[in-house]
Image (cartoon, rainbow, N blue to C red; front, side, top):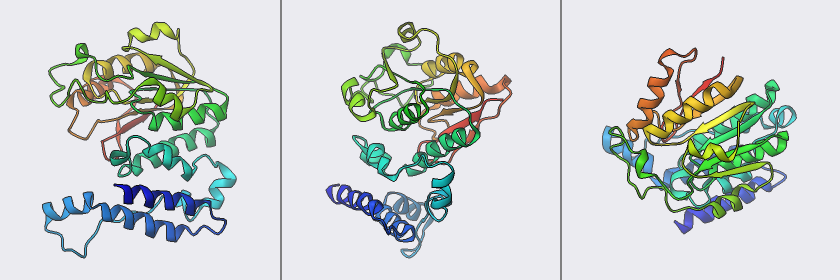
Length: 280
């Protein structure tokens, strides 16, 4: 584990260099992930792949070969944020860089299209994705609302669909750890059980990006009912754990909710099965 942390630190230092070579970054980065062997080992075991065959993916073009155009046009993504993305949750998030790029891309589109407003997240855990939302809110002069118990699940939120849930899951965090990671400017931390915790904020409106990472059926359903009608046209509603087959309660809540809505749920092939809609 220490080797991988050192290696990722090397990549971050490389990104600071004035003569940064993105082709070399791609080679280093994906050699790094390959050495972790998680994905490639799983593929080989299930599909009888040869030792010479490896899964390889590049950094998206806008963040690599077209980085100069990107910086002139939008310039939100900062590779230094990878340190925030992995802090305190390294083993999971270092192999979920697709989601990191996806969240940045949604923010890019809001900036490019001039869609301005507040952002919110339910299910903050250690604050890795919350950091990106908080930074976006600060740079736009808007507010980021972060909802969580900051101490794990509530037993009362469990339903028959939440077969994989453990009461102790995600309890290894606290509010002060998240504040230290995200910063506090333009950010409202709402500690408690949703939706009861809404009494701490009053009405929240003018939303352009909402990220729901509730895991369980009941809080996901409550979050959808509250936040969906408060998202502006063109805003993003991002929902975690839809297609992973690990959190069937979350999938049930999402599928039931969008049966009679104007948008279709679009799956994203990241590690834990994110899906997204854009408000019409």
